[in-house]
Image (cartoon, rainbow, N blue to C red; front, side, top):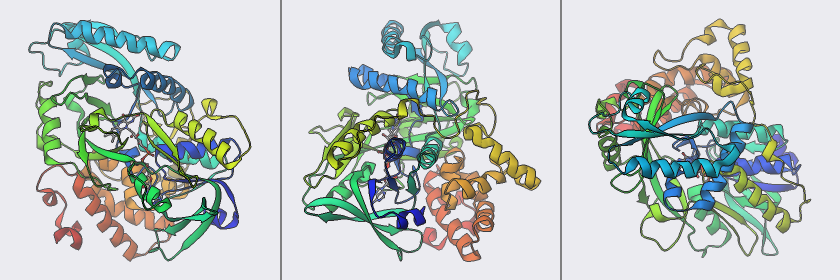
Length: 532
Ligand SMILES: Cc1cc2nc3c(=O)[nH]c(=O)nc-3n(C[C@H](O)[C@H](O)[C@H](O)COP(=O)(O)OP(=O)(O)OC[C@H]3O[C@@H](n4cnc5c(N)ncnc54)[C@H](O)[C@@H]3O)c2cc1C
């Protein structure tokens, strides 16, 4: 990828940011035949795009708010995505439990409207359920006072895996995509942005590059304003941030496979408890924050809030010791004059500066494809690129496989699963698990290093697999094995192994749920930085 970077004198489009938004733009641009470069400061989906609720949805909450346009667009995109990535998007049944007399008719009718809006792209009709039917489908729901429920369908996915497969789709279409490559400045000619200055983050920044492009797109999520300020130091801030956290519990709390949607929490939000990779993820919150961080940290009050609300609905109350992991993400919301972030727009927003830097922010994972199409229309007009039609409505995502058995351990690789099996055939020991309580095998490490630009232990444990989000303690315990295996694959030395383990431990401590986090990391694996 870096050789391609150096060998290309002029790109049609350079995209800054390798989350859902940037990767979607890279796929769209490359599939139209444009010379496309995407650079990501950390790993693909390291930001918000690996920290979502993992729903491909129209957004029942936005329906409650009356944002019909957003819901319609998202439902349409949900249908497009399950068609193009059937190996990654799953039809998930949800129950809205009803404890008050009016909830059945109110949510039942609302969800009928949701079905109707999805039209032929619907995932299955919603249904009114009796008390018995509700408990059959979700036996661990608190039966006390339960009157019935409403069943509906939405999509569920693995966000980081889709991001990796989007990066691979972009490459399949001819794009150059590079992780750990930061944009440090913009180049200008005649007051127009004409390129970017890059720093390689993997070697202390001692390599930097100047890259020319006809169009430059800022798709940096909560970091949008830092790029806008590179263009114009006096530019107004565009983004407001809101943090959302999830806790991860064992499957026993919701064993039936049906998800729960609680439509109204104390702060008027929706709370989900959704089966995911044989665990349950529960969230989320909506807390305004001021600082953009690549590793946001769940606040104590947020953990308490989620626990408190889910305890109200389950027969067995989960407590802090039941939390396997806790992860936080930052929503990039387009600024408006509003005090609460819950009321800020979830629509995407595209702007073009006087110097023709194109910025896209806001939106949802679900609508990434449409967002990309909208950006490309503007880039074509502004940069004078060939007027080629969008190709992504029918473009299969890398790994596409029609018949997917979501209960199989390696299902999320789609067609690439064969590659992992070949590695195991060549070396039987690579079929061993990386940890007794994690489903991942050593061959996945080799596959990720060879084929998925997996550069760091965190990349493997957080985004090539989801070990850190599923069981933070087990992921810490498996870090030394992963580091050694990666070092063997990539020709790294002992020093690299030690640094990688230390660096992963300092990330993982924020995912460990007790307030006394350090006790959960074996003392020999605590880096000096952590003990300070
Ligand atoms: C708690 C939560 C739950 C959500 N749940 C859902 C859901 O269930 N379904 C749904 O559809 N949507 C959901 N969303 C929304 C969705 O996750 C986001 O809209 C989407 O991930 C935003 O992607 P992005 O690419 O714009 O930002 P990001 O994923 O943050 O990507 C921006 C990237 O830019 C990179 N970057 C920053 N500065 C530079 C630089 N100088 N040079 C190079 N790269 C740089 C960053 O490292 C980052 O990787 C949720 C969001 C949150 C916070």
